[in-house]
Length: 190
Image (tube, rainbow, N blue to C red; front, top):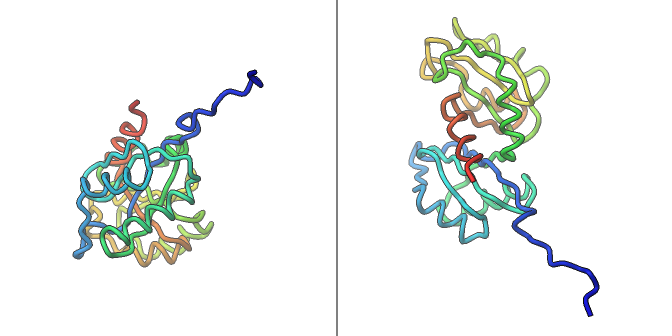
């Protein structure tokens, strides 16, 4: 006799996440993307895909964003032998953040979205502005730090990772506008 209970489709409860690893494939911190995808799949994440060599992963999981962060950080440590902070947003949250682009006139390769583990300090921009070089502008919008490096580019900026982390009060990783668009497009593919 049926009690009218239907099995739960676990796949339906999975969320598509965007995972941004900080500081991989720089300074000897080598992460092969194929191996990373395979490790994600072996750890139970569905549909793991990567974009370029800087640690951008799209995957599905029933875990919370914080749970995905913890699991990916542990996976990188175990698989590659070093710590790499993971910053995770659902694809929906990431798309929403991109709608808050405060500098639509910026050259896309010089506009960077900085995502943090915890909400950025409200006074982050005030702390960073004295270090900005001519042409750089920044603001908080959509729960993220946005930096337009202007025509000087990132390489000539004085806004180094440790300075950014201190100002925002949390680990930050950044991607340029072009990368953000491509990562989101990957996440929206079904």
